[in-house]
Image (cartoon, rainbow, N blue to C red; front, side, top):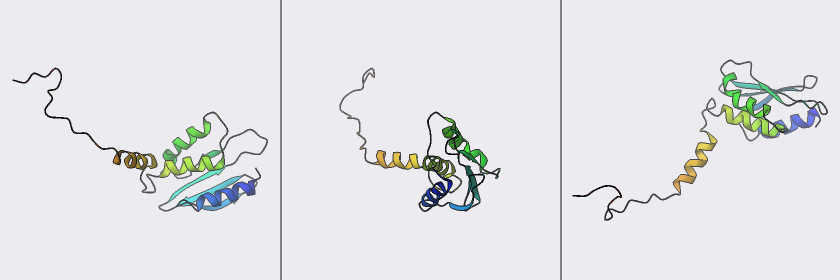
Length: 131
């Protein structure tokens, strides 16, 4: 995919997140993103025929540890799309952005629908003697 198409896809992704695409550098194939309160990162995009993968990094020491999840994902097997990489970065930064973890939300919604059964009191429990 040509770099301008990647930048357009990044702009589209930003419209659904707190991040803004604040800079693009065609020769380095670099895109810089920023969100309040001071969360920043950049993505280096692979060349079309190069076989390299995306690379994410932050120049902020506060942000860098949160990128580990995204970096592990990118280095795992299989080719990744820019959208997949950006989604993983967004998930990594949710705590810094003051957002709940997406998986925790999904679990809470699911578990809220489950009715808890109360144990029946008239049946003695196995292995427990009643006097």
